[in-house]
Amino acid sequence: MKNLLKIAVLLCCSYWCFPQQISKPIPENYFKSPLEIPLLLSGTFGELRSNHFHAGLDLKTKGVTGLKVKASADGYISRIKIQRFGYGMALYIKHPNGYQTVYAHLSAYAEKIHDYVLKEQYKRESFEIELFPKPGNLPVKQGEVIGYSGNSGSSGGPHLHFEIRDENSRPMNPFLFGFKSVKDTKPPRIRGLYAYSLSEEAHINGQQSRQKIKLTKISQNTYKAEEITAFGKIALGVDTYDQFDLSYNKNGIYAVEVFENGHQKFKTYFNRFSFSETRYINRLIDYSYYKSDRKRIMKLYKPDELQLDLVESIDRNGIIHLDKDSLNLNIKVVIKDFNNNTKQIHIPLKSNPIKLPSKKDSVTPYYAQVDYPSMFENGKIDVFIPKNALYEDTYLDIKFKANAVKVHDYKTPLHKSISIGFDVSEFSEKDKQQLYIAKTYPWGKFYYSNTKKTNNRFVTYTKEFGDYELKIDKTPPTIKPINFRDGKWMSNYRYLKLKIDDDETGIDSYYATVNGKFILMSYDYKTKILTHDFNDDAIKETRNKLKVVVTDNVGNTSIFEANFNRK
Image (tube, rainbow, N blue to C red):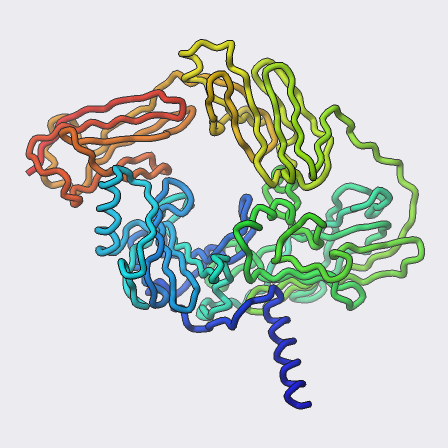
């Protein structure tokens, strides 16, 4: 009997420590810090980012690039990826225990990895590359230098992005594995509490729109909300963030729980998610509020279509039900960071069954259902919405024009890409080459939307509602030398640098040769700089002719040629 009791206690402890079921024991202290300096964070696991959850920790590097990055545990380099955007220069290590670590936004690789990559880049004549070395190619030991911190890809500043993934490549919270040296005695901060009416008869304080609820601080870590009079199905949302002791960054929280009269209704713990789920962030947050106010309110309930293991609904999906016979309710919201620093909000709720004016849907000819694909067309423009692209059945506001279309409201989220097609048969062949589909915004800005061209039909696939139109780009890219001029001696220089730019549709590709042979040039889209490292040892001659060809996204091409000398 005692043994059974012990087992029950262990199972219960495991459940409450890790609400999302973890398939095997967490190997605490197996992984070591990938940096030599004390850990300071600018980003935490699960943070609510644009269209995704943050998959790891962002480790500060004192605002500089070039710090040594070390293997967190024994293993082998299983994947190497260099891309213009995203993770930039990244390394993936597989470990004997089945886990994987990821190191992103690097500035350079360690020598043996650099040599391995450089050989393949010259073989494929491409800076951007993805490689999958075999287990015996690039083994590494814990603490071995594998690269150097940087700011490559879509990084907003120098740092190291570090991840731990499970055997199914699902990102997990690195704090589960240790990393306890990050000092954190600060509880999360609360910027706002919100209430939502979810049913036709529902209201909050007589209103059916989103309501911000006034909070009063009653102790260091406790707030009390003003009494809410409500009816029907309602739910809550919270705008919150966390901070560490030695950092001012506004980071994500670890857990939120909701209780109704002491009974738990809802909880979410940021322990693990899969990349197939990450787009559901647009359903977890108040997407419309984010698009208009650039702040993320996390919903404290689980809509039926929210397929996200991070969120666990315990009672009625976290939705609060108030009818005419409901007693007064006391709702408690508990917000925690990983170090168990906690803030609480106490919310008194009172039923108030008042009659409200009936709401009418904005009926349009364009009704799209979640469970069925929809096609709408007018003239030479068509809009296709696949099954499960929407989160709920919706009357869409679509306005067709001659060479433009407004597709609903950019504040409405999409889960999957829709397609917008244009018949371009009326344009000349020359114009078609420079024609593209642009996404335009209410404030007047427009951007190239990836355009697929097949004969007389152009299509863009997008995960954003909004305005799209045909535009023509007749301006080729610009190419300017940075640290040399025609005929210059470059013997004392390690790098050859040029700046390339394209104002309208952006850079699609570039290709550089010296004396007719390919040379590798890295490209940083943030600075718009192309760089050749003479240490590649690809240039053997004293007198050299450089040729750089740059093409934008509609095919406009510029060619730069110059001579330089080097001993």
